[in-house]
Image (cartoon, rainbow, N blue to C red; front, side):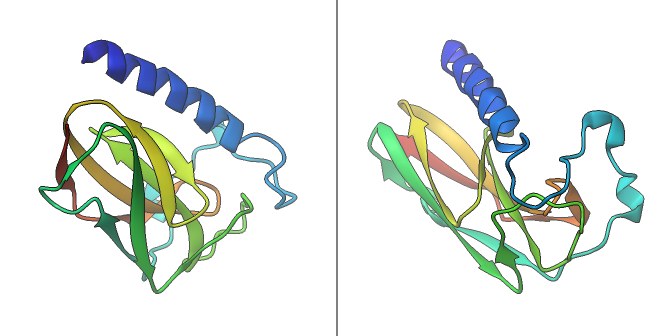
Length: 145
């Protein structure tokens, strides 16, 4: 199982770099680590996020699980932008506390192997940095057979 987590981590990093690369369509450069804003000055968001599938305690087949989330009081936008708006942003998914995808929609196919996983989602601003306070879904635990 540790080898799988390393693989997922490496693949996630590559997807993160690709997703944050130039071509975001917003006309703004994506912030780099050296440009990370002071999170205490970040705006709040009225967004409410919930993982709707898989459900708490669900058992799913190995291969791919289609994770779906519900978002209230905000919308997902495609473009990365430094023009931060409290009701616009992106959804980040975390599997076992590791970023695995930065979805520009409310559903994402996630490759999974047999095991027990913890999944949560976060609604982040258009620049991919968190709101203050952070907007997380409740964590759910599911099993892959």
